[in-house]
Length: 393
Image (tube, rainbow, N blue to C red; front, side, top):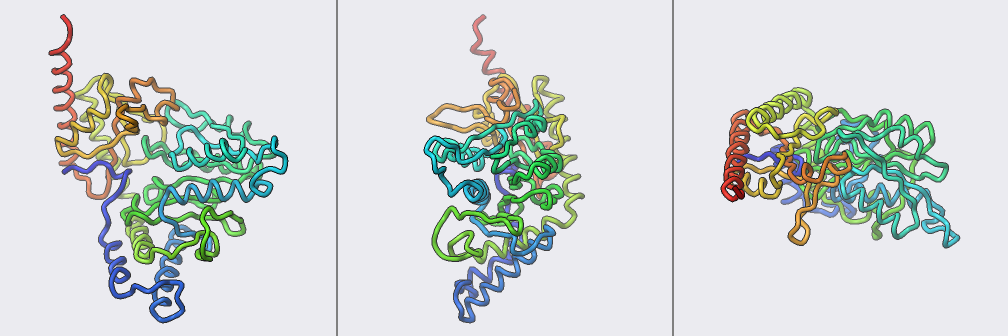
């Protein structure tokens, strides 16, 4: 198997596995218990929080442990928007609760949360346009901010195209106007340098950087209040109730440390492999198009449209050849829906529906890239031959 879907999830690294095991076995105490077993579990969480804070150059109390990226994004969007509005719902039925700004290319963890606030809680929303390469329109952002704007949410790096947004410039615009900025940094963590001083909140998920699934965190700048989106105990300083996943939290901190070692060198290696894959595809398939190619991108991500071919069919064929890749499309009731990210970039529907994403990682090799490129060429030749056989003379 050639695994080229690291943006979907990553294998568990050995340091993360080793960090988990004691808390899956003998150290099983509840971290809220006051006895020795509980204090032992609590110490593991505190240690993980300290390690993450040190690596991110933030305060330990600015970390809220969650179940992953989706919960972290939901907590940021709902929690910050509601805490800044007048008691959640407006006093006057016809009044708006506030204004939120986000981009059309966001992950659905943000898109659907913002849409819920718009449809059900009387928030107004401005959806920012992006360029043909997926970069947020900064002029549109600046002109869209109003006195009643509660929150701006812009992702750091796109999960489908790898396009990196100009967070520093976005931060400057928001700071000058006194508006809170949240960033979905799920794909960015461990791949690019992250400066959390530029944002007020940021979301992350461990399984994107060689940690376990089902755990993540939200960075929340010290001094900011946030309304919880779940209710129960007083865990995580009353910001996220529920008994903490001790083993996964310990593993996440270990994975973060492991990923940070020689990060720049690893990213350069992955960039070279990604470009080699594109060269191999483009030299043999003339109608192949790179999406987001002219923007800053994550070194590991290649989004390619193979014009005239359906991405679902391509992915099935790749799977049969032993290559794991992905697409921005979603299968809904048997029909393929084109990627909302690529459509927002202004690409034709046909190009969006023929897109395939290859995402590389720590264990990707040059031999695998060569084999994957050969597999793409073989599949395209086979599909085109089949199309020609059924063509009307």
